Length: 456
Image 1 (cartoon, rainbow, N blue to C red):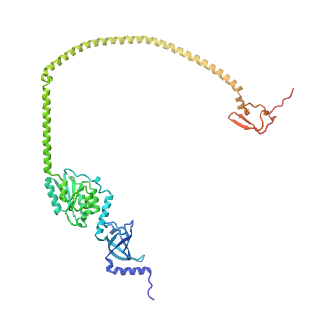
Image 2 (image 1 turned 90 degrees about the horizontal axis):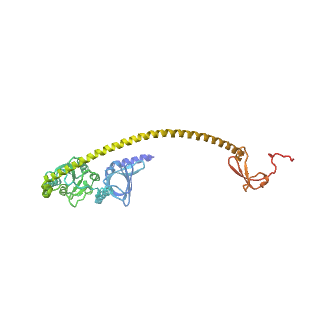
């Protein structure tokens, strides 16, 4: 009898056969993505299909993080990977190492996805763009240390402003490592003490040569940069994503240099013009002031200042004489006031003695009045207490305190006899505390409390 295989043994055997097939260990497969799922672990699970077949596939997190686009259902892709058996389920599947959109359209799809994400985050908005400084202290340049771009930038900047400070942060501008190199170069400029504007870019080239400036991470660094950034990539017709996120886009590196610094000779001409305008304004002001001084000199007051001084001195003498006269009058008035004050104080002293005597008399009378009033008040209180005792004795309320009650019929007549009411009628009873209303159910003419009286 031939060997009986277990499921696990068979799956492992098939896995070994596939692993020995070199063709299946490094294979390129094209198909349409379906059932795509990006797991929370970072792994990607999906199915590749064409018109007649399907193939399960997965890409582990370590490889998925390097993708330049976002996979989605319905997208045609080309995948490099290996074929192996998943022994537990007994199915073979493609373990993807690389993935890219199929054809040239896939490259533009990846670019479009990056553009949409940047735009959704508001990085293209004009309101977040900053103006360039009019006259920077220094210009920072991020580009390749050799090539036409750096030569053009240096030539234009030094021609326009010969004494301008220029700082270069060299970087790779094409290839797989270019985005990271550009980001590191930008970071060197971030906290530079003199650089007020940064130019990032390169000269012209093919679409592939310029692709580094479409890198999403590079674009986000440019958008978040604390210093205004000018992006100058390629020629007029070349537009990269870095152009869209930068504060200013220049068509070429030479154009970026012209935007970054003003023309020194033009500034000098403007300064000379302003200096001349200031000189003319000063001369005009001085001339106007001289005319005002001349006009003042012709006034009579200033023509003979000593005469005006003598007049004022005479006026002072007159005022001094009047002051002396007024001073004598003031002394007499002051003495008279002192005499009046003394008379008032003496009169107040005499009246004070009389007032004190009258106060003593009033105080004695007040004490006598209070004593007599208290005695009379005590007498009246005693009389009132006696009258209150008599009233309490005669009051019907005192009877109520002993347990008796006051009964009234429906006509509010005092009930003294049971014959005054009939069964079914209501009576009102007043107790010591509170009142009640009762309904008569039975009437008895005699009472157990009634005392029998003998007729004489």
